[in-house]
Image 1: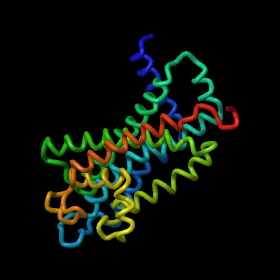
Image 2: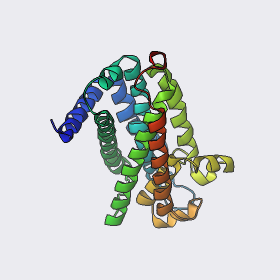
Image 3: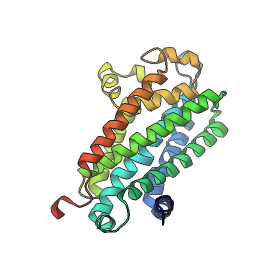
Length: 265
């Protein structure tokens, strides 16, 4: 079999395994959708200040950015330690399969989850809460590159983070608080510029703030950019930050990823 066939087969295997895991379906695929339904039902029709922008419009942009963390970072940070502890990675590393096949399969699975989330977030948001879709090709292009770069960064950081935990249970206890912290400090649940300055400073160092801000630039009116910390949606700066984190994530994976548990080395 050629390498492309291996990539496709491994991707299919990862997606089938995901769909058999009820926990992963609940927390990785449906959680952002549940959150949109809850927050949208309670706060969806409230306006943000005098901007004329509904909270549901603001929130769906944040949920799309958060979906990148749920589908890639959190998913991989939990599942890889499970596979390391139960011997799956040991069997894979001892097989003739190229190592890249494993990581491509994980990325494809994360992409599958995110596409599922995005379709339902936008569909439910539009039908239930009147979310306005982007009206230009340029904005849809921004949505695509932010989603792709965000997914790559989240995947790399999830793979690197997976080395910190001994097994899936420990990984969940480590990864979940990290995701929640960055959601609350990156303008997902709360208006970013209304957060304390120290929170804004910390969040600006990490990818989620830039993913969420760029998503707001896609789904919110251009005039709302005046409410952002930089007075604009800063698409170019977001691309640069995500590009830097792609390199950082790749280096972390290269130097920290472990196929075997520490006590098996």
